[in-house]
Image 1 (cartoon, helix red, strand yellow):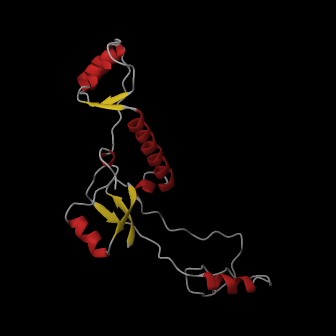
Image 2 (cartoon, helix red, strand yellow):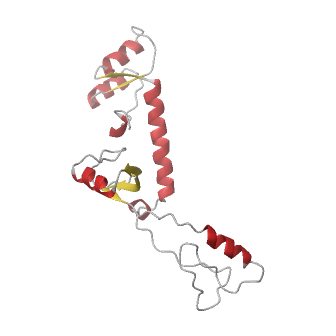
Image 3 (cartoon, rainbow, N blue to C red):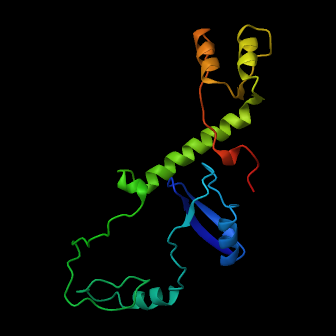
Length: 187
């Protein structure tokens, strides 16, 4: 089983599970792999950190904690090499500039993922608590508003003109774009 971090060309990040690397490649080239948020087919692999078994390093490192340290401890995922000069414990190491499109726009990836999760949760709440009336949305909204049909939450499709007409009649409507991945069952 191969688990990959993926992203579409719009910056939506998601996880994909594949039988092998060749399965990933064949699904990508045949157009079967799409973003669950926007259905974009331009999917790329994101860097993934390998799992390193470093428990033996932690055990030996704990034994060396008795005396004061004059050098920075080596990171667990890098070779154990002492720096060429003493490192001040309060100094800050330089960090590489982010290469993600979201971060270049001034948003952190974590903040965007949080917003994406909140939007997805709101959409799922709407889907769970409303009835899909499809293209009959405007007519059904009017029937509910004028008491000709049972009061309930509905969703469906309406043109911009139909939406404007409903608003002019005092019928509250909200346009909510649904991600393509939520229009059918997710596997």
